[in-house]
Length: 145
Image (cartoon, rainbow, N blue to C red; front, side, top):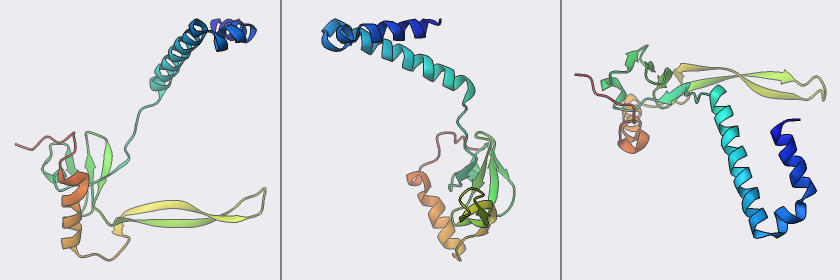
């Protein structure tokens, strides 16, 4: 039997103590905090936050992490992510049939990042890039020398 199982058994056997006394409530709160901390530490061992796509700001082109990939798409080496200009990213949908219910629904098949999803002038795209991140550079920004 694990330590957590023993703790749970003790808790269920002494519910009155842990729910009706101040000391018991405090001990229960402390135990909860310990378990939450252990859970988060375990989770972070395996989970790495990921940014696959980041909107390209006006600062990106002057950053040391910027790598040109095309007119609308670039790469950020810092985040290992795709940098995409505003108004780009056309969704390609496919219809999928649920085998259990027999109902059909739409599912994203792919996103074409080099195509605009709406016809917008290049000036508007540049203006939108100026407003990304409230007009400030991203925290990873380091200017090229």
